[in-house]
Length: 106
View 1 (cartoon, helix red, strand yellow):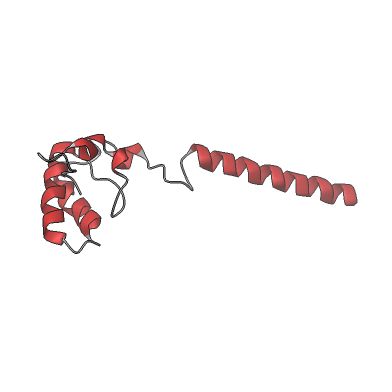
View 2: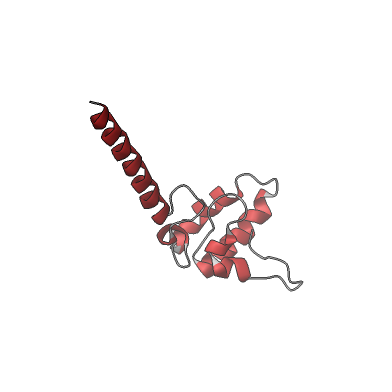
């Protein structure tokens, strides 16, 4: 009976480790975003207003955020995930700069 319990516990540990490896390889549990949903060209232009509303929902500068986000979205067809940061997911959105060299896209 003790051997059965030991084998059972080892099997549970192995399954747990395998599940962790599978989840890590698919980008779950971290900040690795699925390129199908957030990569360059992942949006159609009609999706820009709703994605920019999500992106700009927590800023106090909602109107300018929406203006520049939609401008960037129409050009890049991509809006990064989250409310702030994560711009590396959308290189076009990340690399578009103002005349002064600052970021154009929120």
